[in-house]
Amino acid sequence: MLETRKQSNPLSRSKLIGRCVVSCIFVIFTHLALSLIPRFFSGFSFLTQLAFSALLLLLLVGFGGWCRRTLLRVKASAPAFVFFNILFIWGFYVSVIRPAVSQLNDAVFNWGVVFLFIGLYSIITSDPGIVKNGSACSDQPMESSISQVDNHDEELELFASGLGHESTQDSGLFMRLRYCKTCKAYIKALDHHCPAFGNCIGQSNHRLFLILLFGFMSTEATYLVCSLLFAAKSGILDRPSSELTLSESLAVSTILFTILQLLWQVVFVIWHIYCVCANIRTDEWINWKKYPEFQLVIPPQPGQSFTNIRFRNPYDKGIAENVKEFLALRI
Image 1 (tube, rainbow, N blue to C red):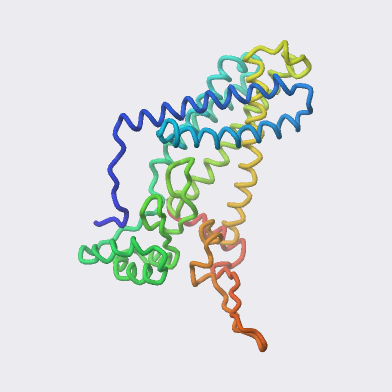
Image 2: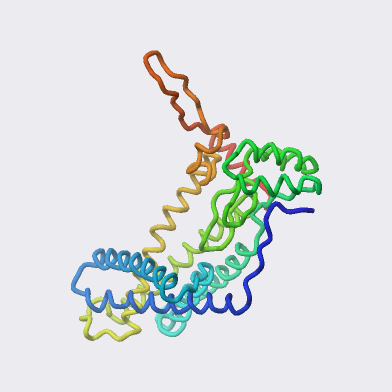
């Protein structure tokens, strides 16, 4: 079997360790920087501190990227950044927050973290639905098509001859093959390439992706409850910033960080639920002008000199049917 993905050389162990070390340092630096918000802005309202935290996170991401590219010349690993963030929050919870919470909350949060570690490994190593070509003679055309990914019709024509051995269900998804420039592969029902997980989200792992998102939100919500219980018992929200220790400042900053994470994740999940109901993928929504099947061509009207092109969803068959179709997809 010849895969359409160009197999790149794996990173050497030293480079991989270097990226993980950079990501770990950046996680620690980020949380220490966020702990300055409750120290210097304790007189402001909680919403103002939340806005300052969001602004500081954006500045840190931009500054960190500039430092890695310009000064260090070392790339970081986004999946490692996610992993070390979970590890940092878990370590802080065990060392500071845990004594103030009940056994039930403690068990729920710890099991949630374990689920996140397992889910993160599963999504990183999962196959999103990479298309394999069984014809050796079509190897050269496949390679040439990869370098011409903008020609959508040519891509589909080349794949038509290579998918004859696939099942009827897979062939039915033929018109939804999308090319990922990051992975250099054709993915069935590609939704997007997720930098945080270092993998494409496609037909085979989309349901796992949604389950993992819900896992992140539920675990973060549990941590938020536990940290608020700790804050209420210790009274850190009512004390002046000059009396706060580093651990107490981190308790407040992790609350702010968790709320920010929940805000964008809720919006993100709502968007993906809409996509499931409308039977459309994120890549198709953003790049619909590249795909002829999503274009409704309206001829020029009398007195007009241009052709109007509007978006239409040829796969929209109704919410109930689309949800049923999504749940029937193989993982």
